[in-house]
Length: 399
Image (cartoon, rainbow, N blue to C red; front, top):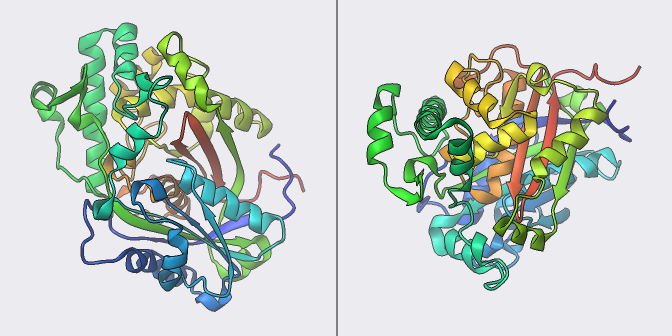
């Protein structure tokens, strides 16, 4: 049984921009405003109805201090309660959790949450990531997501040829999903008969990690509206209910341990806390879709195993059997995921928004059949993980 909330909270509005490498025709407030307008229209509301606004991005990557002040022009937050959050790659899910808590607590009935990033404008994400760690103690992980350790673990578990072929099959699957999503950034039109060519020709970054495996740097924004149960039932024909969420933050300097041994990952800890308290013993059977924060093919696959309690061998088998495809056992990132789109301040929120669209049945061409239970994750900082559970009905609760 999930933790008892003071009030149930439903998602009643979702708005996203299209994502691309550079949105030169929009300023930051204009880009944010596009997502806000779409979320309000989706909920059939105006800003007059909104009680509070939660705003999140990674300021470090754009060199704009307190952007929420500037963005009032686009958020409509003037005269309203305003909260600004920055927690690395998890910021989008942190904003979701904060918005949920603000409504569940009874402080507000309707909360607008916003996540965005405009990396193509004036910042360097790679420079920000590689220079914010201590140069002496943390030099071994200053590459951010550019690491071959995940690839090597799969190779050691199942063999090089099998691991690399399965990884590329997974990459093609992700792109096929992105091609069905009109908002996705990277839509390459890959086919399974290109696997051999991609394995041979995609430039290598670190060890067996190839450029085709990695996420990109995107511009875009996402907005969501959270409502109390009473308001959600009154205003929406199909609210999506937030059942539970958990945030697990490992201490920053524990990352140094990666030089010698691998610490228990925050994904495993998050799943080990969230699932048991909700009575879920087999997450693969329970969840109908999983929108996971996957900054690369290999991070995504390894973390999927951590979340689901699988060995690396079992993860590879699921890829080979097509279990992660839209029609498979547990569809993985039908939206194209982070590898398809990565506007960092919005990225984790997009995972929740896309999972909510699946529950509502509004995902269009990439809709998974009969979604009642959805899972979304965020990742960032130093091995920080957020997990969010969404439900179509309120039937998990005690009467």
